[in-house]
Length: 268
Image (cartoon, rainbow, N blue to C red; front, side, top):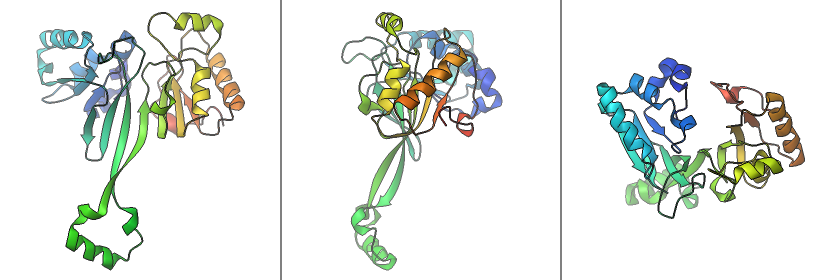
């Protein structure tokens, strides 16, 4: 699970028990407001494992409070993470920690992250792929399977957390990109975004997506200042302007989508 906003336990219900790893992007309340209740319902020895930016003092404080308030959550594991760290969450799944600039911090200080999920597969090296099966078996018997194989990593999911649009390469070649789009754009909103923690404008996100290689885009974190009609209208307008052909989905303010990819893309 990425982030744990208010109401997450009520939304997931019994499915929450399936969550073993939680990756928190930063310490803003809208991203961790539901963490205490989620943990209270699901804590057991060794789980869940809560990963958080290493230099966010809020998380050690929450850990200390929660263990005093709900002693049975002492089995939960709290793990600080740093930039570029890779966490193996299953046999063929790795989560990589990506620094973003939502929270201003000096180099080497980590307070806000995005996360990339990689699927790993072991495949024959290209030079052996066209050989007959009998010949491959002979080579494996002689040199071992590892000598003929390589591990291929595929970025199946990227979660931006809150972040300004800056380095396009962070998101390139991801099958699914979940990206925030707090503001729809405009001069007044640019002034707002210059103060405090930095967010993304929808027009910047769509422009970026038009220049990188992703297969599916999911937009969210829209400001509640906008109506649903304003959000949908602007997404459709920008997708047409930037010739976006990939499926684009959106999570509107105050709504829960249990299986968003089973719905119809907003731009098709």
